[in-house]
Amino acid sequence: MTGIDPHAAAPASPAGRDPLFDTRRPGAPRIPLRPSLALHFALASGAGVAAAAVWTALAPWLGIWRALPLVLAFVAACGLSAAAWRRTQPAVIEIGPDSFAAYSREGVRLLEGRLTGAAQWGGSLLALAVKAGARRATVLVAADAVGREAFRALAVRARCAAGR
Image 1 (cartoon, rainbow, N blue to C red):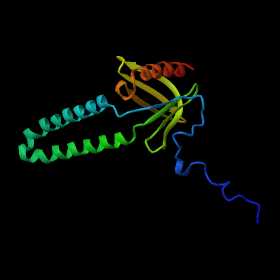
Image 2: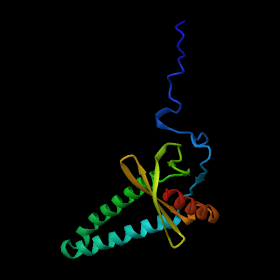
Image 3: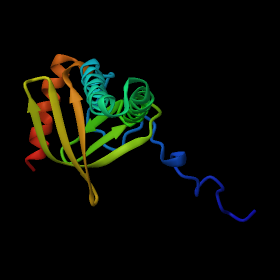
Image 4: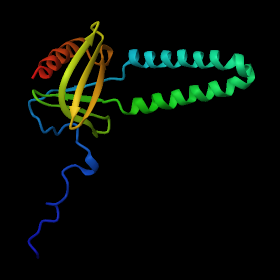
């Protein structure tokens, strides 16, 4: 018997994962986010406009049949980029008086830092500027991703936290 507890050195959460129900900031509310149909529609329509622009640029030079595989490859790249973007979107955000954290659906902490600014456009989109160490990131929260009251409370809380 060496007197060393084998479980003492084990990390509290394996592989950087934080359980969604075990917060370090007890006063910070957790706000669950749904996938935003408005942001997905904006992303898809932007990719469609970009694909039309690629088609318009290539078809006169290469011809219809030679331009088609390049445009389809561009559309596939847009789809893969959209899927990668979708995986990086938070499922739960937590705003405290001096802190901000975003978690994925699996409970992995995507971002932790301090709010440095908040902007709201037309009551339907909230952009949260977060400083995490030397890195800055922006988290977009659409109004259809949370309830009406939660969006309003989030906007007020984000503006108050950003002003500190």
